[in-house]
Length: 332
Image (cartoon, rainbow, N blue to C red; front, side):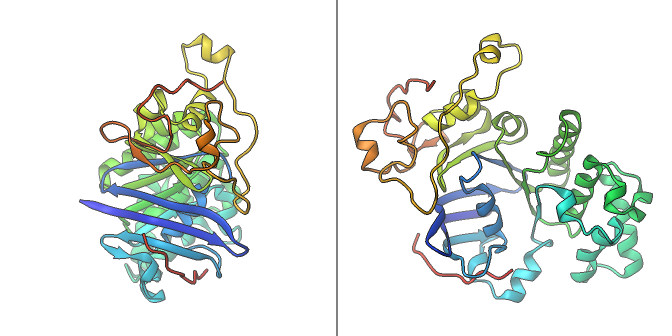
């Protein structure tokens, strides 16, 4: 059963900054979707839009169906009820997300109490259970954020996200600030919790290798659009869109000396969302662009079973590179 369905999502910040442009995605319970791309490609904006956490004045179009209910048309009270209980988010940088003057146990218990899920005593017990579930002693509930390591703080954030037993968890770069060993532990923990609790997970990262190892499916974003989508391992190992190919090639493969000593980069940066180029937004950086790419944007098209790619070369060999809109007043 489809838990989340995004149809024709557009997000435009004040000043005409088009951060997300016509994104379509779907996710079932118990499945893990990775969203990849460079900084500025719209990944975090997509994540924030799913729970209407965008700044006031942002124009949002399309549909975000969570269990069949459109988040964008919900009354404000209903949105508050859905946050934490229906869907929750693990933000990038736990130290900036946790309140430094409150004990972590109180912060984990807060959404439980706000949603009326338990009494104060039961919320404290629930906090201890959640901490142990994410690999921390229940006694750490009395610690302040500065008394915990980076990996421990990230575990606290995961415990908070699970506090009200949501069906969807959004993890926005949850391991970026962590060392490799702790990163592996956190990713293993997230995967285990998704499997055990039949959650749906959206994981956002710039690292295709991490997403290929963690997720079932992968969507690659560029300039606010999904440019390729498919099974995570297939996209990572055999990307069809030139941007996805370049993103994948930027990470050396273990045991492959050629990729280690001659990694391929990509010159330039993603375009400014306030002044996107005509045609395909990637064409100024694309090593295989045709004349038509400068004047015609390329829609996502079928590229095999379960695969889609937005490239004029789809269906041909690509040389490897060196919904109706509504205005929604978002509320913070």
